[in-house]
Length: 351
Image (tube, rainbow, N blue to C red; front, side, top):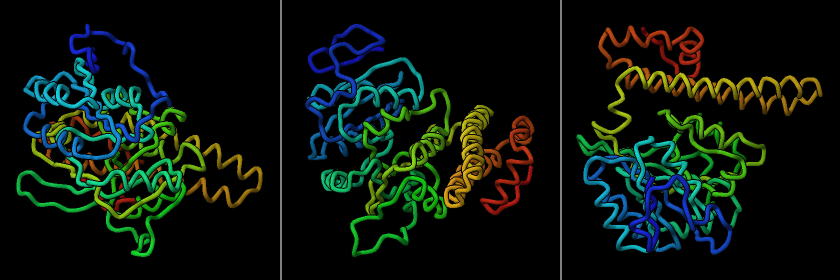
């Protein structure tokens, strides 16, 4: 892994950064933008321009994840022109591993993960971070615009929150309440909605499961349920443009690995469910009905995330498979999973 720091363009490959502070509070900047890059030469400049134009005190950490097109040359050009850019050049390790590299290197008080074929819509991150500081939140959430490359149509997710009005700056809640409210709307887990307080992620050992797709489901559950007092604020502002293109990672994984990864992620989520079963039993022993109710709701919300994850795999992958490939992955839809999908998503699963 080659790490390009300011003044060290010809650094030899190394597995550990040298002379580079990792999550150090000294000389802390406002925000770190983490940008994993893999074969996106057509889109990368637009992505980086949307970050460079932010006037807030920032760093941009670009992780070139073994690109074989012209992406690295574009990244090197931006690195040469902007002193707040750090460039990491590594062998291909996947999106989660690249995000984790950026998280470990981040010096910003806040951190934002952006995919390199997307771009920021929000132009005033200073306003957003002022809100985060004012309310001392762990997570500040906004909206994401979905843009279809093929027909240039777009829509915004999640739908407007009923808890947001023109008279308030944002909806302030705890993490579990926010997760429950989001799941009641047309929403699927994703990091692009969120600005995170970096220390919150580090202190609670929250990172991305490496080697797996559908990583945002597990990451999101861990963010909102890691402790009872996670402080979350939602604002009615579009942060991000999420580009849906035919040859992106999520639209080309039309093979069994996608289901293997979904299954692995959901096994992690089922372990979270078991943890809450134990907490519920303890609360029942203590005759704490209010706590039992809260824990049961969190448990159900984690199961709902499992159902959503399988629902995405079913609607956008399985139904497009050949009969032979459907036969190969059908066993992942166990009776328990199909029951969850019917209960929480409201549709029958035809295998």
